[in-house]
Amino acid sequence: MKRSEINQRIREMEALIQREGFKLPPFLSFTPEEWKSKGHEYDEIRDNMLGWDVTDYGAGNWEKLGNTLITIRNGNVKNPKYTKTYAEKLCRLIEGQVSPMHFHWNKMEDLINRGGGNLLVKLYHANREDNSLDLERPVEVFSDGREYVVPAGSTVVLKPGESVTMYPYYYHEIVVEPGTGEVLLGEVSMCNDDNTDNYFLEELGRFPAVEEDEPAYRLLCNEYPAARD
Image (cartoon, rainbow, N blue to C red; front, side):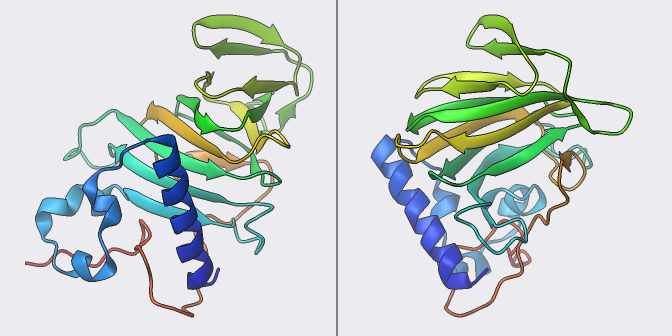
């Protein structure tokens, strides 16, 4: 992705967050120059990859297959220094864009429509033998205190304020309902480990290669400089 596109997507998400009245912690507005002066007091952000994340999954078409998200808080399953057992994220999804079909081996999460349009979440169980879609087994849905069962491949609609729980081995694909507008998606979960706990139905990249065509507006979560001593 070009840096100019990454900058644009971050600004667009900042505008959506402001419209929906969600307040962000200060570190999410640090400039690249400010990060150069930050010491070890911010190691939790560096070590746990908190912050901005823009990806096109290596497909080169963010508007069709992509995501802009923020990791606000997270523990670390591989570093005992960090004892949080939970994580929180925000995502921006636009109409026509797909957050692709995937599941997590370990993480349980709630997907929450924080505002905007309606979310459509397609659900399957994963076959544990080969990680394929289970096209037959019905899916148990847990949504805001309500439990019910739907056929495999069903779509759950989340209006603003509504949520659904994703258990391990729950395949899910997320899109915005056409005509309802962009969505601010929240995620509250167990510790998040994007390096080892995501399985995509189709093989995809995770972090984009960046073409530096203009200065960075915000650093991505994998771009922080080392702490200043």
